[in-house]
Length: 484
Ligand SMILES: Nc1ncnc2c1ncn2[C@@H]1O[C@H](COP(=O)(O)OP(=O)(O)OP(=O)(O)O)[C@@H](O)[C@H]1O
Image 1 (cartoon, rainbow, N blue to C red):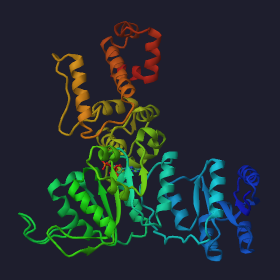
Image 2: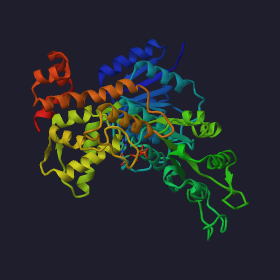
Image 3: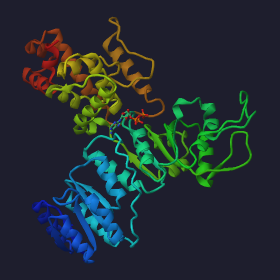
Image 4: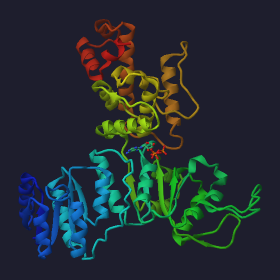
């Protein structure tokens, strides 16, 4: 049975009762209070083996209290709970030396597990990282999925660990890499980003490690590489799956030995760079195909961070949309609001381009529409005008010619869809995903062809009228098609 005394501070009596019960049942002795002053008195008297505190208390903000506690009793673990679930709350908790941050609401089992871990860890004080005083990081989203990311980031801030960020295009991988740098130990050093997909393959090694004069045709002078530029700071290797094999071998050596040579050079150069890598590909598939070194993967994948696609956290869309409207207002465009239907449309859309696509849409809405309120019909028109319903290789657009058979057109779309993933496969669940995507446009086309007459559209499609009515309601197609 675990043991220890827990000091609990929260001004919400119901929360105190629930936590008190759960922790007592787990074997701990609990003292609880509604205010910071009492908590501080207990701590100053030397009581308690662990503190659980809410951030907002009537007499003091726990973030102001934390540094005092850390000074007086550096090895007393503190767990901070908060209902203000932003990235900054997680970061502040970490900066002020909290052992763990739990966004409300949380699972009681998780709390008991965290308490158990905190009390059984070796007693070395968790040093607060110096405050960055940078309130500017625009990581938006309070969904459970983003909370997980914030907590992971907060834990990573005081470390130099190599991080591998995965996620679809536009999910914020670079933004997260920057946050890790801006709030981490190396924030005084440079942040250097290199996109493997954007550099010609034959130049990647020289780009990363630099080259000597005469190392290859066209190398007319010595050139510093990105490693050298990132010395003392962070090197962000974006689209790492596109790194050619030879460069992978060289990178692996740097990670193993902490030194490298320039292209054409002989003298080993010591390096002190924190690596953050990112990819929207499944590196395990690339490994199977012999395109990515497994040993390099393990070196890079020390801490994996998966950023969820926007469609898995639609509850973040209102905050993100608001944030982007404020951003574009600063750029001189007028601020707008979205009506209920518009917001609803955004939540139902599947966002293949994720947050970047939403950002671009908001920018278009702000630039193109004079009205203050954006309606569902406007959003529909803009989303329909997007060139990509399915991801396609750059530079290609797909238009079915009237003479082309439907199955030919579908086949061509699918071939392009697959080739958009180049050497990998699309995410699993394709059958239902594709059928779901086809269903909306098909019903929409039938309704348009019958001028919104659901009885005739049902005949045309060969489905039951009630089935069609239900589908129309679910897909909200009627509003869209007849309002044009
Ligand atoms: N959580 C977020 N809050 C606010 N803005 C975000 C968020 N996530 C992404 N963005 C914005 O969306 C855009 C795309 O993000 P970013 O470039 O970091 O994505 P990415 O995953 O690195 O994309 P790619 O794989 O295509 O390089 C950026 O303008 C970024 O500022």
